[in-house]
Length: 428
Image 1 (cartoon, helix red, strand yellow):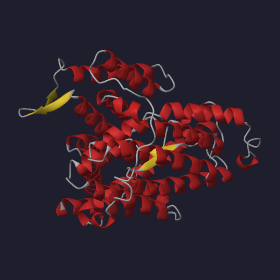
Image 2 (tube, rainbow, N blue to C red):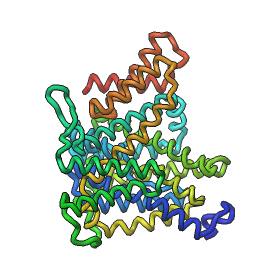
Image 3 (cartoon, rainbow, N blue to C red):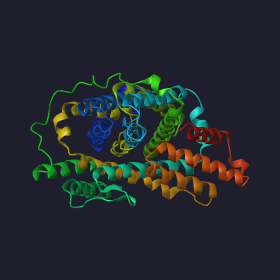
Image 4 (spheres, rainbow, N blue to C red):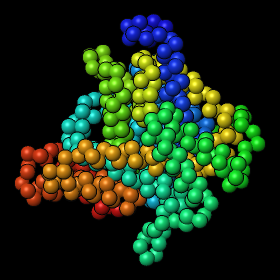
Protein backbone atom coordinates (compact mmCIF):
# COMPACT_ATOMS: atom_id res chain seq x y z
CA UNK A 1 0.00 0.00 0.00
CA UNK A 2 3.05 2.28 -0.30
CA UNK A 3 1.41 3.55 -3.50
CA UNK A 4 -0.88 5.64 -1.29
CA UNK A 5 1.96 6.62 1.10
CA UNK A 6 -0.03 5.59 4.17
CA UNK A 7 2.81 5.95 6.68
CA UNK A 8 3.72 9.38 5.40
CA UNK A 9 0.13 10.49 5.97
CA UNK A 10 -0.08 8.91 9.42
CA UNK A 11 -2.74 6.36 8.56
CA UNK A 12 -3.16 2.63 7.87
CA UNK A 13 -5.33 0.25 5.85
CA UNK A 14 -7.85 -0.31 8.66
CA UNK A 15 -8.37 3.41 9.20
CA UNK A 16 -8.74 4.04 5.47
CA UNK A 17 -11.21 1.14 5.20
CA UNK A 18 -13.37 2.50 8.02
CA UNK A 19 -13.19 6.01 6.55
CA UNK A 20 -14.20 4.73 3.12
CA UNK A 21 -17.16 2.85 4.57
CA UNK A 22 -18.26 5.92 6.53
CA UNK A 23 -18.19 8.09 3.40
CA UNK A 24 -20.16 5.41 1.56
CA UNK A 25 -22.88 5.36 4.22
CA UNK A 26 -23.25 9.15 4.18
CA UNK A 27 -23.63 9.42 0.40
CA UNK A 28 -25.31 6.16 -0.70
CA UNK A 29 -28.53 8.17 -0.88
CA UNK A 30 -27.33 9.75 -4.15
CA UNK A 31 -28.06 6.59 -6.17
CA UNK A 32 -31.85 6.45 -5.63
CA UNK A 33 -32.17 10.23 -5.25
CA UNK A 34 -30.46 11.05 -8.53
CA UNK A 35 -32.36 8.30 -10.34
CA UNK A 36 -35.73 9.61 -9.20
CA UNK A 37 -34.85 13.25 -9.97
CA UNK A 38 -33.49 12.57 -13.46
CA UNK A 39 -36.27 10.10 -14.31
CA UNK A 40 -38.56 13.15 -14.28
CA UNK A 41 -36.66 14.24 -17.40
CA UNK A 42 -37.77 11.10 -19.21
CA UNK A 43 -34.73 8.89 -18.66
CA UNK A 44 -35.54 5.31 -17.49
CA UNK A 45 -35.00 4.88 -13.77
CA UNK A 46 -33.49 1.37 -14.01
CA UNK A 47 -30.71 2.58 -16.28
CA UNK A 48 -30.18 5.71 -14.15
CA UNK A 49 -29.59 3.64 -11.01
CA UNK A 50 -26.88 1.66 -12.77
CA UNK A 51 -25.31 4.72 -14.41
CA UNK A 52 -25.29 6.71 -11.17
CA UNK A 53 -23.55 3.85 -9.39
CA UNK A 54 -21.05 3.40 -12.24
CA UNK A 55 -20.04 7.06 -12.47
CA UNK A 56 -19.69 7.22 -8.68
CA UNK A 57 -17.42 4.17 -8.71
CA UNK A 58 -15.41 5.44 -11.68
CA UNK A 59 -14.93 9.00 -10.41
CA UNK A 60 -14.22 8.09 -6.79
CA UNK A 61 -11.74 5.28 -7.52
CA UNK A 62 -10.04 7.34 -10.25
CA UNK A 63 -9.61 10.23 -7.84
CA UNK A 64 -8.15 7.92 -5.23
CA UNK A 65 -5.60 6.55 -7.68
CA UNK A 66 -4.75 9.74 -9.60
CA UNK A 67 -4.96 12.43 -6.90
CA UNK A 68 -4.50 10.27 -3.79
CA UNK A 69 -7.11 12.25 -1.86
CA UNK A 70 -10.01 10.93 0.28
CA UNK A 71 -12.55 12.81 -1.85
CA UNK A 72 -15.56 10.89 -3.17
CA UNK A 73 -17.45 12.04 -6.25
CA UNK A 74 -20.89 11.48 -7.73
CA UNK A 75 -23.68 13.24 -9.60
CA UNK A 76 -24.07 16.70 -8.06
CA UNK A 77 -27.24 17.62 -6.25
CA UNK A 78 -28.57 20.90 -7.57
CA UNK A 79 -27.37 20.55 -11.13
CA UNK A 80 -29.27 17.27 -11.52
CA UNK A 81 -32.41 19.16 -10.47
CA UNK A 82 -31.54 22.00 -12.87
CA UNK A 83 -30.98 19.43 -15.63
CA UNK A 84 -34.45 17.98 -15.09
CA UNK A 85 -36.64 20.85 -13.98
CA UNK A 86 -34.73 23.76 -15.53
CA UNK A 87 -33.54 22.49 -18.91
CA UNK A 88 -35.79 19.58 -19.85
CA UNK A 89 -39.07 20.58 -18.20
CA UNK A 90 -38.47 24.33 -18.00
CA UNK A 91 -36.93 25.02 -21.42
CA UNK A 92 -38.51 22.04 -23.12
CA UNK A 93 -35.31 20.65 -24.61
CA UNK A 94 -34.83 16.87 -25.06
CA UNK A 95 -32.84 15.12 -22.35
CA UNK A 96 -30.36 14.03 -25.03
CA UNK A 97 -29.59 17.69 -25.75
CA UNK A 98 -29.35 18.43 -22.03
CA UNK A 99 -26.72 15.69 -21.79
CA UNK A 100 -24.91 17.47 -24.61
CA UNK A 101 -24.90 20.62 -22.47
CA UNK A 102 -23.42 18.58 -19.60
CA UNK A 103 -20.71 17.24 -21.91
CA UNK A 104 -19.75 20.67 -23.24
CA UNK A 105 -19.56 22.24 -19.78
CA UNK A 106 -17.53 19.29 -18.49
CA UNK A 107 -15.21 19.38 -21.50
CA UNK A 108 -14.64 23.11 -21.04
CA UNK A 109 -13.90 22.49 -17.36
CA UNK A 110 -11.47 19.71 -18.31
CA UNK A 111 -9.59 21.81 -20.88
CA UNK A 112 -9.40 24.81 -18.56
CA UNK A 113 -8.13 22.58 -15.73
CA UNK A 114 -4.80 22.68 -17.54
CA UNK A 115 -4.76 26.49 -17.50
CA UNK A 116 -5.03 29.31 -14.98
CA UNK A 117 -8.51 30.22 -16.24
CA UNK A 118 -10.31 28.86 -13.19
CA UNK A 119 -8.10 31.06 -11.02
CA UNK A 120 -9.10 34.04 -13.18
CA UNK A 121 -12.79 33.16 -12.80
CA UNK A 122 -12.43 32.91 -9.03
CA UNK A 123 -10.71 36.27 -8.86
CA UNK A 124 -13.26 37.86 -11.20
CA UNK A 125 -16.39 36.88 -9.28
CA UNK A 126 -16.51 38.29 -5.73
CA UNK A 127 -16.83 35.78 -2.89
CA UNK A 128 -20.16 37.29 -1.83
CA UNK A 129 -21.65 36.59 -5.26
CA UNK A 130 -20.34 33.03 -5.13
CA UNK A 131 -22.06 32.59 -1.79
CA UNK A 132 -25.26 34.07 -3.20
CA UNK A 133 -25.09 31.58 -6.08
CA UNK A 134 -24.80 28.69 -3.61
CA UNK A 135 -27.71 30.04 -1.57
CA UNK A 136 -29.78 30.61 -4.71
CA UNK A 137 -29.24 27.06 -5.92
CA UNK A 138 -30.20 25.90 -2.43
CA UNK A 139 -33.44 27.87 -2.63
CA UNK A 140 -34.09 26.45 -6.10
CA UNK A 141 -33.65 22.77 -5.24
CA UNK A 142 -35.58 23.16 -1.97
CA UNK A 143 -38.45 24.73 -3.92
CA UNK A 144 -38.30 21.84 -6.40
CA UNK A 145 -38.35 19.33 -3.54
CA UNK A 146 -41.32 20.99 -1.83
CA UNK A 147 -43.20 21.15 -5.13
CA UNK A 148 -42.57 17.51 -5.99
CA UNK A 149 -43.64 16.51 -2.46
CA UNK A 150 -46.96 18.26 -3.03
CA UNK A 151 -46.35 20.64 -0.14
CA UNK A 152 -46.36 23.55 -2.61
CA UNK A 153 -48.87 23.51 -5.48
CA UNK A 154 -50.00 25.78 -8.30
CA UNK A 155 -52.60 28.45 -7.63
CA UNK A 156 -54.33 30.63 -10.23
CA UNK A 157 -54.81 33.36 -7.64
CA UNK A 158 -51.38 33.46 -5.97
CA UNK A 159 -49.19 31.41 -8.37
CA UNK A 160 -48.30 28.99 -5.56
CA UNK A 161 -50.01 27.92 -2.36
CA UNK A 162 -49.87 25.26 0.36
CA UNK A 163 -50.68 21.75 -0.82
CA UNK A 164 -53.36 19.40 0.47
CA UNK A 165 -52.19 18.24 3.90
CA UNK A 166 -54.93 15.61 3.96
CA UNK A 167 -53.29 13.85 1.00
CA UNK A 168 -51.51 10.67 2.08
CA UNK A 169 -48.46 11.15 -0.15
CA UNK A 170 -48.03 14.76 0.93
CA UNK A 171 -48.18 13.70 4.58
CA UNK A 172 -45.60 11.01 3.82
CA UNK A 173 -43.33 13.73 2.43
CA UNK A 174 -43.84 15.83 5.57
CA UNK A 175 -42.98 12.79 7.70
CA UNK A 176 -39.86 12.23 5.61
CA UNK A 177 -38.88 15.88 5.97
CA UNK A 178 -39.22 15.64 9.75
CA UNK A 179 -37.03 12.51 9.73
CA UNK A 180 -34.34 14.17 7.60
CA UNK A 181 -34.32 17.29 9.77
CA UNK A 182 -34.14 15.22 12.95
CA UNK A 183 -31.18 13.05 11.95
CA UNK A 184 -29.39 15.98 10.31
CA UNK A 185 -29.85 18.21 13.37
CA UNK A 186 -28.54 15.43 15.62
CA UNK A 187 -25.52 15.08 13.29
CA UNK A 188 -26.08 11.35 12.85
CA UNK A 189 -23.84 9.81 10.20
CA UNK A 190 -25.84 8.58 7.25
CA UNK A 191 -28.71 10.89 8.22
CA UNK A 192 -30.11 11.06 4.69
CA UNK A 193 -30.17 7.34 3.89
CA UNK A 194 -31.51 6.51 7.38
CA UNK A 195 -34.35 9.00 6.92
CA UNK A 196 -35.12 7.62 3.44
CA UNK A 197 -35.24 4.04 4.73
CA UNK A 198 -37.43 4.87 7.75
CA UNK A 199 -39.85 6.84 5.58
CA UNK A 200 -39.93 4.02 3.02
CA UNK A 201 -40.59 1.38 5.68
CA UNK A 202 -43.37 3.59 7.07
CA UNK A 203 -44.91 3.79 3.59
CA UNK A 204 -44.61 0.03 3.04
CA UNK A 205 -46.07 -0.93 6.42
CA UNK A 206 -49.09 1.35 6.05
CA UNK A 207 -49.71 0.44 2.42
CA UNK A 208 -48.89 3.87 0.99
CA UNK A 209 -46.38 2.31 -1.40
CA UNK A 210 -45.94 -1.32 -2.50
CA UNK A 211 -43.46 -3.36 -0.48
CA UNK A 212 -40.43 -4.66 -2.45
CA UNK A 213 -40.84 -8.33 -3.37
CA UNK A 214 -37.08 -8.69 -3.64
CA UNK A 215 -34.11 -6.61 -2.57
CA UNK A 216 -31.33 -7.57 -4.97
CA UNK A 217 -30.97 -8.30 -8.68
CA UNK A 218 -28.43 -8.16 -11.46
CA UNK A 219 -27.57 -4.62 -12.64
CA UNK A 220 -29.94 -3.12 -15.18
CA UNK A 221 -28.66 -2.30 -18.67
CA UNK A 222 -27.66 1.31 -19.36
CA UNK A 223 -28.18 0.93 -23.11
CA UNK A 224 -31.29 3.20 -23.17
CA UNK A 225 -29.16 6.17 -22.06
CA UNK A 226 -25.60 5.12 -22.94
CA UNK A 227 -24.03 7.42 -25.58
CA UNK A 228 -27.43 9.04 -26.21
CA UNK A 229 -26.19 12.61 -25.72
CA UNK A 230 -26.80 15.08 -28.54
CA UNK A 231 -23.76 17.35 -28.63
CA UNK A 232 -24.58 19.04 -31.95
CA UNK A 233 -27.96 20.30 -30.72
CA UNK A 234 -26.26 21.64 -27.60
CA UNK A 235 -24.13 23.90 -29.83
CA UNK A 236 -26.74 26.62 -29.70
CA UNK A 237 -26.48 30.28 -28.76
CA UNK A 238 -29.69 29.89 -26.78
CA UNK A 239 -28.05 27.17 -24.65
CA UNK A 240 -24.79 29.08 -24.07
CA UNK A 241 -26.04 30.52 -20.74
CA UNK A 242 -26.97 27.00 -19.61
CA UNK A 243 -23.50 25.70 -20.49
CA UNK A 244 -21.91 28.58 -18.58
CA UNK A 245 -24.25 27.92 -15.65
CA UNK A 246 -23.18 24.28 -15.44
CA UNK A 247 -19.51 25.25 -15.74
CA UNK A 248 -19.56 28.02 -13.13
CA UNK A 249 -21.68 26.05 -10.69
CA UNK A 250 -19.49 22.97 -10.99
CA UNK A 251 -16.35 25.07 -10.55
CA UNK A 252 -17.62 26.79 -7.41
CA UNK A 253 -19.13 23.60 -6.02
CA UNK A 254 -15.91 21.64 -6.49
CA UNK A 255 -13.64 24.36 -5.14
CA UNK A 256 -15.90 24.95 -2.17
CA UNK A 257 -16.13 21.26 -1.31
CA UNK A 258 -12.40 20.64 -1.72
CA UNK A 259 -11.55 23.67 0.40
CA UNK A 260 -14.02 22.72 3.11
CA UNK A 261 -13.05 19.05 3.30
CA UNK A 262 -9.35 19.81 2.89
CA UNK A 263 -9.32 22.31 5.75
CA UNK A 264 -10.53 19.61 8.15
CA UNK A 265 -7.29 17.67 7.73
CA UNK A 266 -4.89 20.15 6.11
CA UNK A 267 -4.98 18.10 2.91
CA UNK A 268 -3.99 20.92 0.56
CA UNK A 269 -1.83 23.17 2.73
CA UNK A 270 1.61 22.49 1.24
CA UNK A 271 2.98 22.34 -2.31
CA UNK A 272 2.31 18.60 -2.61
CA UNK A 273 -1.22 19.20 -1.36
CA UNK A 274 -1.85 21.83 -4.03
CA UNK A 275 -0.76 19.37 -6.72
CA UNK A 276 -3.32 16.92 -5.32
CA UNK A 277 -5.88 19.72 -5.40
CA UNK A 278 -5.20 20.32 -9.10
CA UNK A 279 -5.39 16.60 -9.89
CA UNK A 280 -8.68 16.27 -8.02
CA UNK A 281 -10.18 19.07 -10.13
CA UNK A 282 -9.00 17.34 -13.30
CA UNK A 283 -10.60 14.06 -12.20
CA UNK A 284 -13.78 16.00 -11.41
CA UNK A 285 -13.86 17.46 -14.92
CA UNK A 286 -13.02 14.10 -16.51
CA UNK A 287 -15.83 12.39 -14.60
CA UNK A 288 -18.36 15.02 -15.68
CA UNK A 289 -17.43 14.53 -19.31
CA UNK A 290 -17.60 10.74 -18.95
CA UNK A 291 -20.87 10.95 -17.02
CA UNK A 292 -22.64 12.61 -19.94
CA UNK A 293 -21.90 9.50 -22.03
CA UNK A 294 -23.33 7.32 -19.26
CA UNK A 295 -26.51 9.40 -19.23
CA UNK A 296 -26.14 11.35 -15.99
CA UNK A 297 -25.76 15.00 -15.08
CA UNK A 298 -22.64 16.81 -13.86
CA UNK A 299 -20.34 14.94 -11.48
CA UNK A 300 -18.70 16.79 -8.61
CA UNK A 301 -16.80 16.31 -5.35
CA UNK A 302 -19.10 15.46 -2.45
CA UNK A 303 -19.07 17.33 0.85
CA UNK A 304 -19.96 14.02 2.53
CA UNK A 305 -16.29 13.12 2.04
CA UNK A 306 -15.74 15.10 5.24
CA UNK A 307 -17.30 12.24 7.21
CA UNK A 308 -14.55 9.91 6.03
CA UNK A 309 -11.88 12.49 6.77
CA UNK A 310 -13.27 12.83 10.30
CA UNK A 311 -12.81 9.05 10.65
CA UNK A 312 -9.13 9.45 9.82
CA UNK A 313 -9.13 9.05 6.04
CA UNK A 314 -6.11 10.84 4.59
CA UNK A 315 -5.26 9.20 1.28
CA UNK A 316 -6.81 7.98 -1.93
CA UNK A 317 -7.19 4.52 -0.43
CA UNK A 318 -10.24 5.89 1.39
CA UNK A 319 -11.73 6.85 -1.97
CA UNK A 320 -10.90 3.46 -3.48
CA UNK A 321 -12.70 1.70 -0.62
CA UNK A 322 -15.69 4.06 -0.98
CA UNK A 323 -15.88 3.33 -4.69
CA UNK A 324 -15.68 -0.42 -4.10
CA UNK A 325 -18.50 -0.24 -1.57
CA UNK A 326 -20.62 1.50 -4.21
CA UNK A 327 -20.43 -1.64 -6.36
CA UNK A 328 -23.01 -3.06 -3.93
CA UNK A 329 -25.55 -0.50 -5.14
CA UNK A 330 -25.41 -2.01 -8.63
CA UNK A 331 -27.36 -4.96 -7.27
CA UNK A 332 -29.94 -3.00 -5.24
CA UNK A 333 -32.29 -2.07 -8.10
CA UNK A 334 -35.48 -3.67 -6.65
CA UNK A 335 -34.93 -1.97 -3.29
CA UNK A 336 -34.24 1.46 -4.80
CA UNK A 337 -37.24 1.21 -7.14
CA UNK A 338 -39.52 0.45 -4.19
CA UNK A 339 -38.55 3.67 -2.42
CA UNK A 340 -41.48 6.12 -2.75
CA UNK A 341 -40.58 9.50 -4.32
CA UNK A 342 -41.79 11.35 -1.21
CA UNK A 343 -39.15 9.55 0.81
CA UNK A 344 -36.57 11.03 -1.57
CA UNK A 345 -37.66 14.64 -2.11
CA UNK A 346 -37.22 15.65 1.57
CA UNK A 347 -33.50 14.97 1.04
CA UNK A 348 -33.53 17.45 -1.84
CA UNK A 349 -35.16 20.03 0.43
CA UNK A 350 -32.58 19.46 3.17
CA UNK A 351 -29.62 19.72 0.78
CA UNK A 352 -31.09 23.06 -0.31
CA UNK A 353 -31.33 24.19 3.31
CA UNK A 354 -27.66 23.36 3.83
CA UNK A 355 -26.65 25.34 0.74
CA UNK A 356 -28.90 28.25 1.71
CA UNK A 357 -26.87 28.77 4.90
CA UNK A 358 -24.19 30.44 2.74
CA UNK A 359 -26.45 33.51 2.74
CA UNK A 360 -25.41 34.26 6.32
CA UNK A 361 -21.79 34.77 5.23
CA UNK A 362 -22.55 37.53 2.72
CA UNK A 363 -21.51 41.11 3.50
CA UNK A 364 -24.59 43.14 2.53
CA UNK A 365 -22.94 46.52 3.17
CA UNK A 366 -22.30 46.90 -0.57
CA UNK A 367 -25.38 48.01 -2.52
CA UNK A 368 -24.20 46.17 -5.64
CA UNK A 369 -23.80 42.95 -3.69
CA UNK A 370 -27.14 43.51 -1.98
CA UNK A 371 -29.08 43.87 -5.23
CA UNK A 372 -27.20 41.10 -7.06
CA UNK A 373 -27.61 38.61 -4.21
CA UNK A 374 -31.32 39.42 -3.99
CA UNK A 375 -31.92 38.73 -7.70
CA UNK A 376 -29.80 35.57 -7.66
CA UNK A 377 -31.52 34.06 -4.62
CA UNK A 378 -35.06 35.15 -5.51
CA UNK A 379 -35.13 34.52 -9.25
CA UNK A 380 -33.58 31.05 -9.29
CA UNK A 381 -36.60 29.45 -7.58
CA UNK A 382 -39.24 31.92 -8.84
CA UNK A 383 -38.28 31.52 -12.51
CA UNK A 384 -37.37 27.85 -12.07
CA UNK A 385 -34.02 28.64 -13.64
CA UNK A 386 -30.53 28.85 -12.17
CA UNK A 387 -29.40 30.52 -15.40
CA UNK A 388 -31.93 33.36 -15.10
CA UNK A 389 -30.94 34.03 -11.50
CA UNK A 390 -27.26 34.16 -12.41
CA UNK A 391 -27.88 36.41 -15.40
CA UNK A 392 -29.97 38.95 -13.48
CA UNK A 393 -27.45 38.90 -10.65
CA UNK A 394 -24.44 39.59 -12.87
CA UNK A 395 -26.23 42.34 -14.81
CA UNK A 396 -27.51 43.98 -11.60
CA UNK A 397 -24.05 43.86 -10.00
CA UNK A 398 -22.43 45.43 -13.06
CA UNK A 399 -25.16 48.08 -13.42
CA UNK A 400 -25.07 49.27 -9.79
CA UNK A 401 -21.25 49.42 -9.79
CA UNK A 402 -21.43 51.43 -13.02
CA UNK A 403 -24.07 53.85 -11.71
CA UNK A 404 -22.07 54.45 -8.54
CA UNK A 405 -18.89 54.87 -10.62
CA UNK A 406 -17.16 52.12 -8.65
CA UNK A 407 -15.02 51.25 -11.64
CA UNK A 408 -12.29 49.70 -9.52
CA UNK A 409 -14.76 46.94 -8.56
CA UNK A 410 -15.56 46.12 -12.19
CA UNK A 411 -13.23 43.63 -13.85
CA UNK A 412 -13.13 41.92 -17.23
CA UNK A 413 -14.76 38.80 -15.82
CA UNK A 414 -17.80 40.68 -14.53
CA UNK A 415 -18.11 42.64 -17.79
CA UNK A 416 -17.93 39.41 -19.82
CA UNK A 417 -20.53 37.61 -17.70
CA UNK A 418 -22.85 40.63 -17.72
CA UNK A 419 -22.54 40.90 -21.51
CA UNK A 420 -23.28 37.20 -22.00
CA UNK A 421 -26.26 37.53 -19.64
CA UNK A 422 -27.70 40.48 -21.56
CA UNK A 423 -27.15 38.61 -24.83
CA UNK A 424 -29.04 35.66 -23.37
CA UNK A 425 -32.02 37.91 -22.59
CA UNK A 426 -31.99 39.27 -26.15
CA UNK A 427 -31.68 35.84 -27.79
CA UNK A 428 -34.07 34.18 -25.35
